[in-house]
Length: 224
Image 1 (spheres, helix red, strand yellow):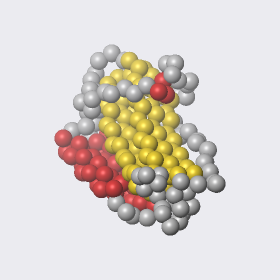
Image 2 (cartoon, rainbow, N blue to C red; image 1 turned 90 degrees about the horizontal axis):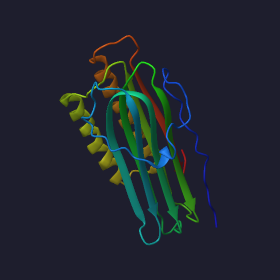
Image 3 (tube, rainbow, N blue to C red; image 1 turned 180 degrees about the vertical axis):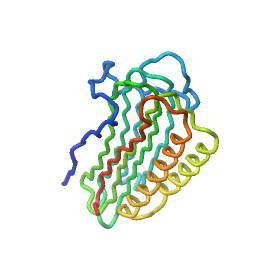
């Protein structure tokens, strides 16, 4: 029997953010379902976002593939705790009876503020449990957009992101080998990053610097 698991490093914070402990108890397990259109210029408030994708393939369900593509837009915030996580497990299969487990999570969070306290966590974990020859991939992509004034993505940028989302769905459901899937997921992430940078370039300017930071973590079996 074999069991493989890799450590889960946390991602770096954005340049303008000040690292602090999670400002609300148990924040890791709390999801804030804020509509994408919710960015406003109202009073500063804390923001919490948590997204998690989990897939598990085994002898009863040889293939399980899941993905998530979330956009969470906040207005002015004084503190933000954002967490993005992908976990994939393959168990109990063999080289003659392979399993395939894929979990991909894309999280986009926008907020505004001059001195926002930020805690950003982005992690992935892929585990093969007694699963010789199985393909297991977990990928977490987190995009943190910080601007001096609230940013609302316009219809053109949202259409571009919707198109990337559709292609992510197709990629997740495909039978592309795990190593190639990693490469293509990275390509989609680069497109998201470019769309967000373009959106920020068109946004009103303030005293502080605009910032788009992408956090990426991939874990998988077999590796490259």
